[in-house]
Length: 356
Image (tube, rainbow, N blue to C red; front, top):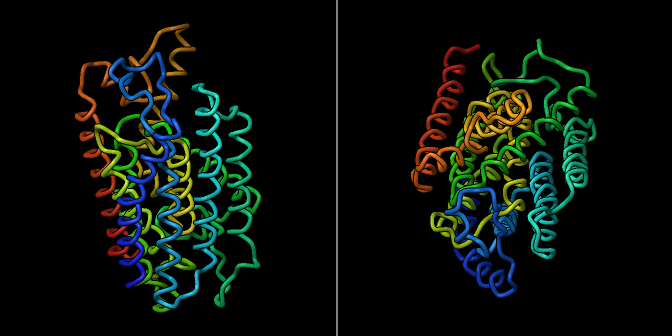
């Protein structure tokens, strides 16, 4: 438990201090955000705002986790290394995308094919290792389960390994892109991710307290390393909290694809490693809505030969085009996220109380 508090507190301090330094360095080098010409006109004033702030989130999370483990004298677990590897791997893909945009002064970074390959490689490596028998613990548990779960592993949802790997790859790619789509307003994605990772911190702590490795029962949780996953989720929560100080409206820095792809991938990895793949859709309901708005917009546009369902997608831009102030959209979307998170935690706890 001490490691959880240390990781969360240290990452908050690192991002609070580190982001201010990053703003100075990025601004001095001219690493500023490019703004879409077809977006809300109010966003044009943001052109040139330092971006790639996700580097601070990633570095602060990894550093605070390692320091917390060093202070408490505990060895990092296989699940933690996998989660951090996915976090850093997708952050690297996002960094390359951001750097190309900035260096070539264009709105397109990595080509879609190259970006997809990068996400696929990171997701495939994670999925393969998470199911690998080489990473079994003393109880024979691999980091990821061999079934698709809502709250806990179920014998009724066991899938072949090949299908599980494909599912994990799709979940990781989908979630990382969903957070990336949501990162369009000052503080929106940062605040939403902070709440969802905070929820996963509580989920991991509860799973550790009812862990089958310590308290075998009909309602225990078969998760390989719940306490160590709680340390990482607390570290990411703290990093988002600290970064929000500088990213809230009016933002002094943007996380860029470096942060959004890393955070989205880490969310998917956390869901897989905690055996709560379907619960993620509820906890991260805002990200689901944002993604659906883009899918519906594109589908409606093609079906009606040019008509639009929303004034602009993703959904947050639609409300801006209706005349809502940016800060109003952000706060109301945060409220929606809070409702989804509360509902997800409520369902998680109710399932345990019911003993099913």
